[in-house]
Image (cartoon, rainbow, N blue to C red):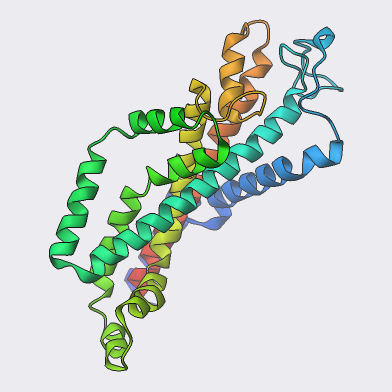
Length: 291
């Protein structure tokens, strides 16, 4: 073993970043948080059979206890059930919106990167113009048009989030299209569509997957912001965003338990996704370096 290898191993073993770089550290905790969150949001409401929409004003603002684990809101609804159902909606909206954004961005970026020339110049100038538009204001305008429709909300967030993925995929294909296997595919008569979607895009999968992880977190934050402002998921359907909004209208000193659970749920899930994306990006960089 060379001295350089020993020095590298020692650095990996003792630097503070080691925990973040290895799956046994924050990445594993982040993945565990996501698995628990998804499982709880998906399964617990069906197991406990508690109606998250049932009102009982005689139990309004009950504090956390054995019956209501996270207390109740101003209408006596169980906050724990509403948090789980709202989390399921927020996670689904974030995941679907991210997939829509990555699908559009991957196809758009692949065409720009593969063909290049005037087509690449024209299409990327469109991207530059759209990037100059404040995304939040565009989201507010489009979301207000659909009056809280969840499916439309997914499509709106996805349709306004594909610009950065398109630039990343374009950059990847500008490099990949010069590889030998592309020339070999052309030599055996493969068409452009087959080369792009059967050879180039699969080899850019690492970038696509890593970017998707960050996009889910961004889409969740977008849904939360829109729901908080009242133009995303609307009551009585819960989401983490409108739970925060409704909690703000209550007296925080009187019912503090209404704002803390959705706030910590958003913070923990978004941090988990970002840590997981960081690890995937570093793992991809090390794999590329080893290759």
